[in-house]
Amino acid sequence: MNRIQYTQQIEKRHYTYFENEILGHLKKLNDFPDNSTKSLDHDFFNEINFTESIIEFNKYLFFEQQRFLEFFNANIEDFVIGLPYKLRELNKAIEDNFKLITHLLKSTQKCTTEFKNFFYKLFRYDNFSMRSIYSCYYEIALKETRSKRFSPTVQKKIVDLIIRDYPELSDLEQDFYEPENSLHFKKKFQKLTEIFCTQKNFNSVKIYETIWNDYILILSSNVTICPYCNRQYISPFVSDNGRVRADIDHFFAKRRYPYFSMSLYNLVPSCKQCNQSLKGSKELQFDGLHPFENDLHTYFHFKLIQVLDDEIDIDIEVDKSISDTTNILEYIELFKLKHLYNYHSNQALDLLKKRKIYSEEYLNSLFLSKDFDVDHSFGSLEDLKAFVIGYPIDENSISSDVLFKFKRDISIQLGFQNNVSSNVDQIDSNLLEKLKKINF
Image (cartoon, rainbow, N blue to C red):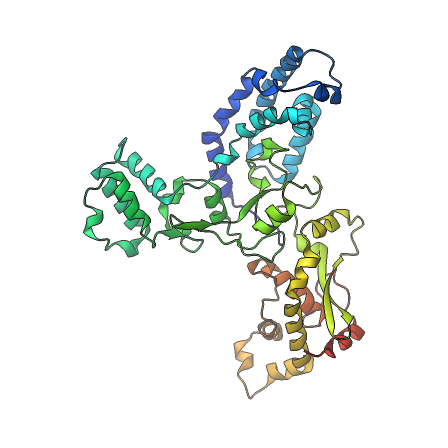
């Protein structure tokens, strides 16, 4: 739930990819829009109060499309690598100056589908996908050998590239160099289970230095925990025998805002549960909290409450200093944080049990004890507490592992660490005493 960031290197690679793979397709906006508007009907024209003929409508739309292309080219850097506030500014300008395009994209009329598809395909998000590892090696081998098709020379180059990226395969059997037809060699390649990529070895696999797609973006980002829920790992793995990656959520929905479908800061790595099952095409406030702008966890905290004599529940309390809590409550509800975190009440019980065992006095005596070398193992009492709790106390570590935000909030409530966050209530000593009496 920490704010996530992309590096300048990621920005540069994404911009280069956009220039090479997408920019040329936008020239289709110079085509007269007969095909994309042929299904428009009276319901749509009544919706926008347009009383002229479809021919006149197409003339106006054609003019808008051309102006939109000029506008895009004049603001290409903001469209491609602009931060969310830049995207909001661009969207405001689009809605103010390109009324017909905006109406077509916002309309719920089925007759606008063709135009929406036309506009969406211009930005080629569906092409921003990982190819097989073999095809990557094959493409580079063709380029480096200046070949047009598979040959023994290309085959040898592929093997050399593999050994460069995976030195542990330097003893590949000689028959990998024996001339093969392309199909047989590809099958041999795909049996090499040692050829895979994770964030651990990503930087040493040179083949990906000139390739850009959804997997490479996520591998480059070092985002391993879902920024929306902090409950799920989204660690990527790539091989020709199987692959898995985070979902990429379009914070501003790609079908409603197709011109942002390939905007870098609209691509949020997230878990499938948050993206597909919960958020889907639903939209949070356009001007609201954004994972590339805000530390979402600072706006609320988890707390342990007693619902029966021997049962606990997990509740969520929003920072009382926030004047308008609509957006954060919307976020909490959309991702069902309260309900889903109650599945982790056992984690809270573990912390409660540790609090009963490790009182403040006992922790101090343990830290200062001469019977153990505790003071040399831990630099401070806070380090010892972090060891007992089972996670780093540092707030900046929240996104380093799942449930850290949850554990941190509960440990503050139980008095395991200082009340360092202004949005966390003072410890309710009466509640704490009641909680300690719960039988495990």
